[in-house]
Image 1: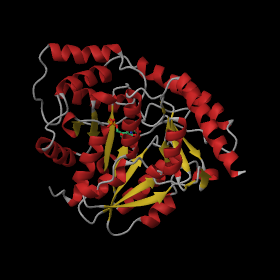
Image 2: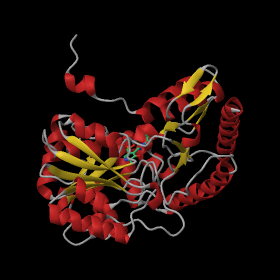
Image 3: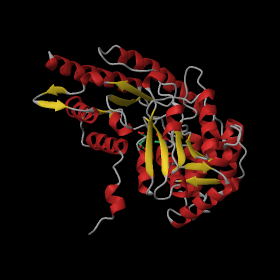
Image 4: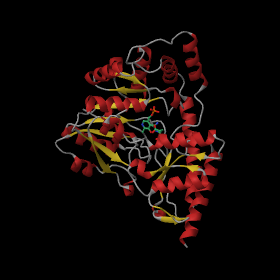
Length: 400
Ligand code: PMP
Ligand code: GLU
């Protein structure tokens, strides 16, 4: 059977592949420690799970509107008003099968073949892949480590050309944790208005911030709501990754276009999951803060552990639940007659030798780094740090 060029050329998601491999090894009884996937280890709060079960029992198991049930779209508007100061009507909301699918819909509706999309790097694996899938060209603009991975807006401006149509933002950022501050947002908004760029603003980690960092949506800046697609969802804030509910908030013509796309593809996200998400967004929010403060405590513990590993440099993330550690020191390390040329080789070796699953920086467009998720129990984090220390010490010993 001939596979289409589009499907042949799409790069596999390394975060998904590493998570699948680690889960497979665990199922086979292997002693694997996985800090691969960015997935809260908490259970979905009881009141949310109960709402999903109740929806199934009440027969809410039929097709819904392609853009999602009206009650949920209203609850999303209330949330956007309450938490982000944004005014949307329910006809501007499209409920999707996870935030990844929300990004997919937005790129599909905004990018024509030949269009360029600016992607800040390090970037989540999926953005350049989706831009390419729809025939666009991702233009990657580096965020310097010396600036805490905050964007260099002058470099963004230099990367803009006549075909530049779109800027994809992600704050708090996966994998660096960088949270765009007011200065960043104002400079970026100014650029987008002058260059007439559309923005996809992926805000899935909005609640997971530390040290007084505050998330602010770029759509709340003057003149920005009309050019921005806000992407969000319940996966991270409510520990609901497997329920697959995300959403977009956008200008009406775009919402209609994404609704049409959805009507011809997935039809709509699973009905019981929509009812669970409705409970999450309209229920008490103390569970979100409880999980955030657990992540904050784990961040302290993990930073302390990782920073005590000789040669490893680990910046403190401002948000999200990842450490993006500098492992450049071990680039080209030789072990057992083999050379670990880049971050992918290093991660492969750590999985083989230490049974430790991490994601190479290369997946996010940055060599010399590894990403460690700290959305895991303290015991898991301590064991992961022990294995990493042991693995890197083996490489150091071989180098002597
Ligand atoms: N955006 C970012 C930045 C992510 O890290 C992820 C991964 N979970 C998603 C979107 C996708 O979220 P969901 O699981 O809701 O599709
Ligand atoms: N977003 C998470 C991650 O970066 C889950 C996997 C994925 O969707 O890419 O690990």
